Length: 261
Image (cartoon, rainbow, N blue to C red; front, top):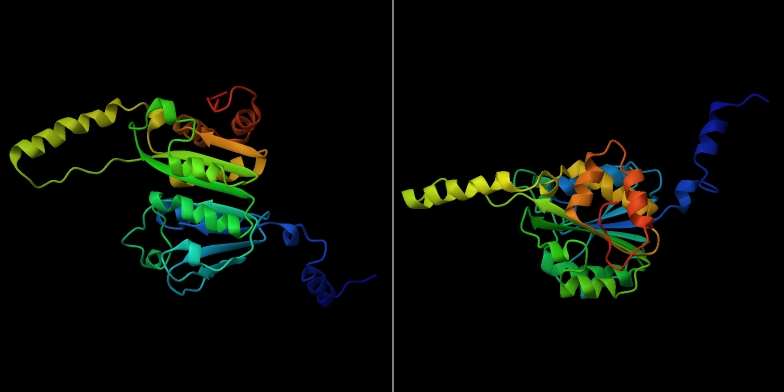
C-alpha cells in the first residue's frame, strides 16, 4: 500500500503509545549560571523527558521544544501553587550578570534548599537531584559522602523515592586587585594555595556536572545517594560515566559508604 505524505504526518502526531508521552514531567529550579544552562540543554534534548518546566521570576517565553516557563510569584515556596510533576532538580549556580535572560530565572540560594524541596514534594516529585556547591579544597573529609547540614537531613526525611546529592567544587573568590601593599601581598601569597588543591577536588566543567547528574538519575535505585567531589570529578573526566556511576550506585556497604569504587 502506498503511503501519502499526509498519512506520515498524521501518524507522527499521534501521542498514543509514544515513549515520550510516558516520560516524566521535570521541575527545574535554579536554571542560572553555566550549570543551569547546561542542565536545561541536556534535559530538553533528552528523549526520556516529556516536559521540562523551568522556574522563573518574570514572564518569559521558552523557545525550546518541550520546555516551558513556570512563573512563580513571591519568595516563599510554601505559598506557591502545586504543579504536579515527577522529577525535580535544584541547582545553585548564581546568575551571570552579562546574561540578561538569567535575570528572569529563579535563582536558588543554599538556605532555600529545604523550602524548595518541600514544595517539590507537595507537587508529587518522587525523584530529586540537588547539586550542592562548595569552595574547592574546603569541604571536610567527614561530610563529603554524607548529609552535611540540618537542611540536607530534612530533605532526606521528606520521603523522596530517590534522592541524589552531588557535591560540586566551585572556584574560590578572586582577590581584589586594589588595596594596600600588605593586603595585595597577602592575597598573592594565599593564592599559591590554589595549586595545593588535589586535581580531583577542583571545579568540574558545567557540562560535565550536568552529564554526570543526568546519568546518575537514570540508573539510580531508590534511596539516598551522596556523590563526593572526587566521584563527580572522576565520572566527568571519564569518556563514559555510566560504568563508574553504576558501580557506585549499586555497591553494597555501610550506610554513607559512597567512596570511589
